[in-house]
Image (cartoon, rainbow, N blue to C red; front, side, top):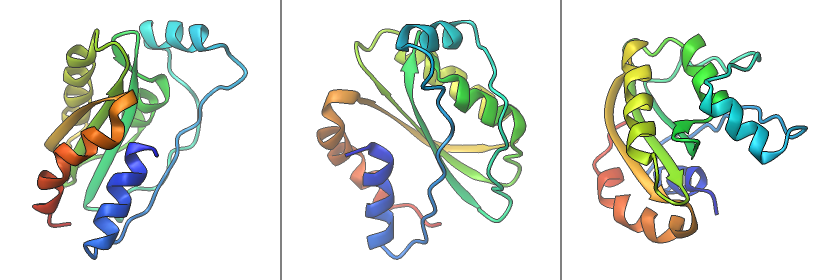
Length: 143
């Protein structure tokens, strides 16, 4: 199960309203081409979801080539996070570059006015076990 779904389900059971948005992935490209685009910070063109009505956001993506994915970077570039609490999460494979990617993620969101409340780094193959480790932090969220 995807980490975003686990987080959303958990918060829903605690009485929070949860809305999901997915960002586009160019499936016409190979995985290596997508990683190449991520490495060189290529931007994607798409209409972003309207987040103006939300106070708290969870943004998550995998790490590709020591970076967040191009769709997330493009979303952040276009969004306004002023007066929003933001929780970030990334999933990773080998672990190489996960901290670099998270620092960039944090800096991009803060640069757009977001208040980064917390962040989570979880190994992709251990999502359910990793989720168990962050449940305590999610318990304390007041959205």
